[in-house]
Length: 461
Image (cartoon, rainbow, N blue to C red; front, side):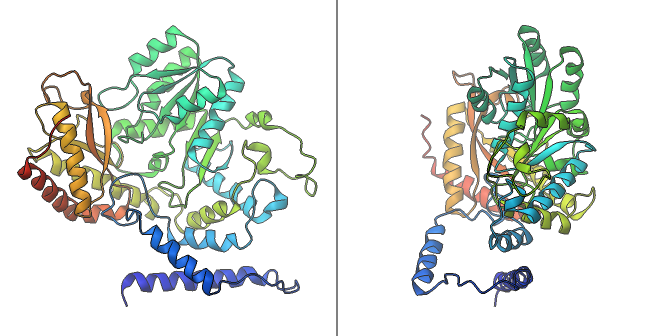
């Protein structure tokens, strides 16, 4: 019996024990027949399993493409167990226990960022959490613009449009961070109500200089929202560069923050979180409901959330994971984040030593690394990236592609051309085991690149 099978049987055993304990709490009730899973259901499940094979192996270390990370087994088990009750964390009536757990997990997140006072809750995603942050910002500064880097997630521009707020796009510097001179120019040009600082851009993992943004806040009096949906947990990492460390240490002074436990927090999709440092912004959520809040006078999470129904199972899964892997500097959870950055730095080191590749000016700030195959022109490098991406997949190495500014690379990397961007290969080394798989990943990338170069059949378009 292989190790995977043994681990899965252990998983089922632990889940069964937890389910039995939960069921004991309702043993006093008369038996209520539940639908079973007969032969027809078994066949359908088998068909679903076969169809699910049409996915890349996201949980495997050879998947080093997009930011996809398997949930921890305890999160999977806790979620499945809680789903037998299927609580709704909109109101205490729909999920007393899971609502209490949500308050605890949000408190743990706030503590991680050094916020003794806050207002916050879980959300279905970072997108919706960011929507709430910008909605509150719009309530506080009606008509003022929202400024974000050109490398910030596109959700900010989209959400600004939904909310009727003007979006100001700020140029990034050669490291992919928000350019401070460009930001100050925009602050002088128009009324900016909120500046979005991205701590961990989704394309390259860049960390905006939050500490310097907060210095500008003293003069221009805008709100600072931190979008750390991807990189928020790296505040625990002990191996960040000095500039990234300064940015994370400044989170205490930000006005609001988003983090996604379903990324580095080892949770199933979808589990995001929004935190406000000023609890009084809860006044904007106030509403009355004639049918939802009639059995309890206590705080309902639905009274501080734009979303209504929300999966209580997400709170249970995160609560269980936090208990097993607490947010401690130097702890097991933090070491997993550090391993990802070590893997990214190790891969960049191998790329930098290979004349076939061009590496960007800035090293990885977190755990994302990108590079471009060397070509005479940007178009040639872009075509090579696509070809190596396809060849790597044939060798069971799963990378990603990203179109990025050519100015992220050293001057002279390419001949002058009309293009200003290049299609790069990109790898998100967010699984701790990626560190131990660098040699295997490199061997496959090396072979894929050699195969493409030897064939010489890449035609730039």
